[in-house]
Image: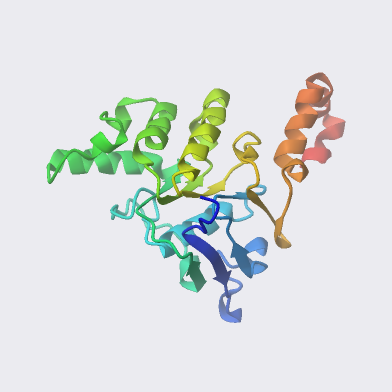
Length: 255
């Protein structure tokens, strides 16, 4: 495993001057990204809302052959064509290994993926797809349970897994359990790219963490991240932090 070099090596972004004022190229962070190198195990994208994390994740996923709304490479549906053309300006450099599995998980469009699975199973063109997700329709489970079914049953190893804010459906306990699951899959020659706000999910050891800001993208250490520092400040003294947050005179600190 120590010689495993991953499935995705680098992504280069070249933005021509004639599109710089158009979405999504007018997002300051996107304008200032040149090249991203990925860890063969786990790479994180973090940053405030509006920095372009999901837009970048989507473009990379589409460039690799995944459906823009999520799922495996076998999914080919379009609920609403809202994805950007950023993918047209990316140059993907793959690693030396060929993935046998893969999944693009998006919190915002996971409902559409679950609906597509049910639709295909009703058409009965082959073995039930839901069998690969635990044998039960994802719509017959809670949001968190359906996410967990994907992690536990659909992710099999030897693959690239792209997760966009997976914490949106998971309890704190499940977020910690997710680190265990990630580690098991990493030990089965898997590579992860994860956009998250969760300091728990962000804690996988020796991972690459990229902070997205209006100035571009930069590597940061775990304890330097806003997710870690702000959560730590709050938990160290929740009374003080709550007083600050609810005091009108302190509003500007968090705006």
